[in-house]
Length: 247
Image (spheres, rainbow, N blue to C red):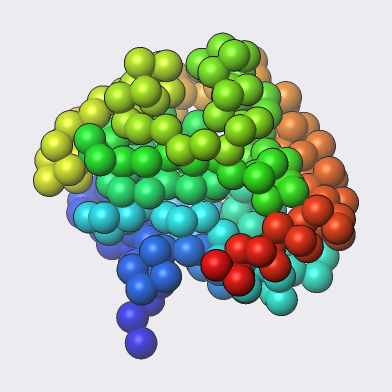
């Protein structure tokens, strides 16, 4: 059986690749545990200087696996997904993302925590939390309005409509858009360039940039998680999920 998260090292660059193409790379709780394990290990491994998140040529990730989510999450506050969010939010080294195809839910909010992001021209991002009867996660209710402005953040978060790579670039959410076949190459070049920098200076510079908003980000994750857990018990969410599985 193929691992749904492929972890590979190329020098000082660790790549974590979503590898569940038959399910559009939908993320299970077990996958979140693996991601958290990898980040925790990488945080203290001097041989790792940069982490890259990637998916397949036609899909980054469709977000949470809803069936797994419905059956596998009993205590949301201590669920593997929250462990991953908390771990990624305080990860001390640069994180990059190579994105082709669909990036749904956490597939989009994860990008807000990455230092450099490259999208393929055909990438489609979506934040369908409200559409599912839920609320934003991964501090996206805090970070996204600050990053792209309230009007654009409200459009994306409150309508749940997908948006394309060029729109994300023009809004200032990502660094570059390129041909789908070139995305991994661009991100590899970025990662290798960063890995060649003096590691302590690299981490110190990143820490200084993130320090002013670190506490707010962590608090936003907890605030969102509290409401998210309540919404999971709501009739709206149950109805929306039932309708989703009927499609």
